[in-house]
Length: 107
Image 1 (spheres, rainbow, N blue to C red):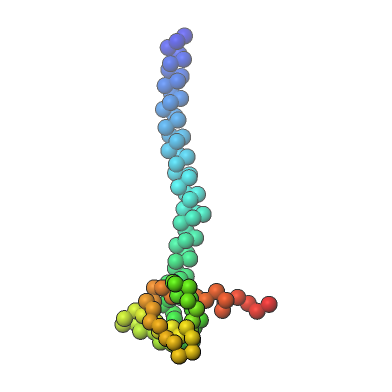
Image 2 (image 1 turned 45 degrees about the vertical axis):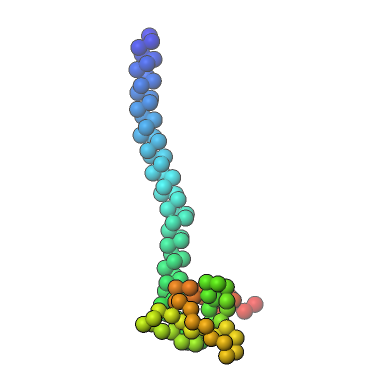
């Protein structure tokens, strides 16, 4: 009788490893669907905006400075942003994001 119990326990232990593997794969898939994929989409939208920058676009720099694009230099990968009348700063294109207030519909 003891040998039957030991055999049943051994069989259960082997099946538990497969169940654990399936559970880990399921957790990875769920994390990918809810965390990684949306972040990749957002990064793609940001890159698309940065590549389509044009003069007059309202932007926010990575440091939180709001301004208007005055010039885009594709060779140096920089953007000149006017942050106040007559005050223009040069910012790396990778640190320029869309101004959220310019995208909001008027209420």
